[in-house]
Amino acid sequence: MFVCLVCLFIFIFSLLRYSGNAIAKVQKRTYLKPNLLEKVAAVVGVLSLAYTTYSKFSRREGLFMTNPCHISLLVLLVLLLGDNSSDRMRWLHTVYGGSLFGAFAALVIPHLEGLDVVEIIAFFA
Image (cartoon, rainbow, N blue to C red; front, side, top):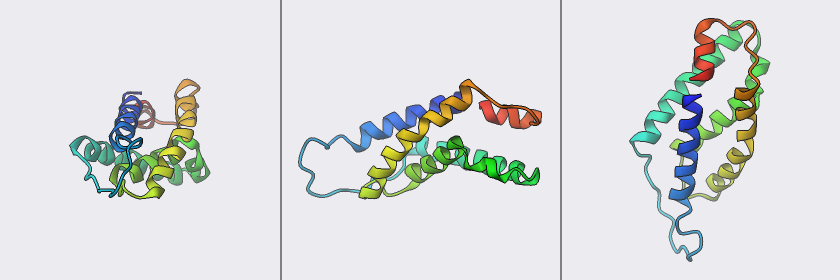
């Protein structure tokens, strides 16, 4: 739950950061390097995605990796570490905002049957 709130905070922060000149005419888009908070969130996201992928495929449940919460984490990782000056990244912000409902729905109505203790902690962390 804490990581989800941190991801939401980072998403809102990145929207404010990258859309600051949306009203003004932008002549040249510049690449903003990821700051320390974004790098730490990306490392935590990569570790979480790697562990979840390993645990799902080791139990032959790899199809569950297509759930919206896993896809939104993957899009968030691309947004955190990618070039924010491109139009594709602005489009990905829209995709990420639309996929957040699936991640929040998974937190409200969790399906925890068959998960071990480490996976349950990683689910809510």
